[in-house]
Length: 166
Image (cartoon, rainbow, N blue to C red; front, side):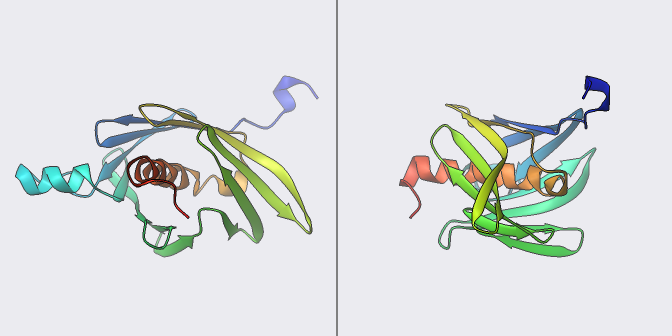
């Protein structure tokens, strides 16, 4: 198969800039802003510093709202009028089951097919700035990968402060 006939490679890269997270999906840029991003003063500063709730923007328009529920260790994504509640270790999307193995170095995404697993995506996690590069993931996850990536960054921040999530 020559290079021109191969499908486009899906690539998402995150960089943390203070309390903002810049999300680069192929050539399009998004900005994830924390709760309190538009508040001035001490209250806004505290909300931004400890936020586990973020809003994803594209060209000034809000695309989605995300929350990491650290008590129950789950992700909540509100997008296109729907709410997705996702277990960070496994979830179903588009009729397919996915398993996620997370380590200090990154994330591996597996599609569960009957009793076997197929590696379908991999992300490298950079320190100390919590950058994340997710590449070669399935096309059907394109609509959620930005939010999942931001939420994994938030989860890693919580683990860094409070210790590993059980």
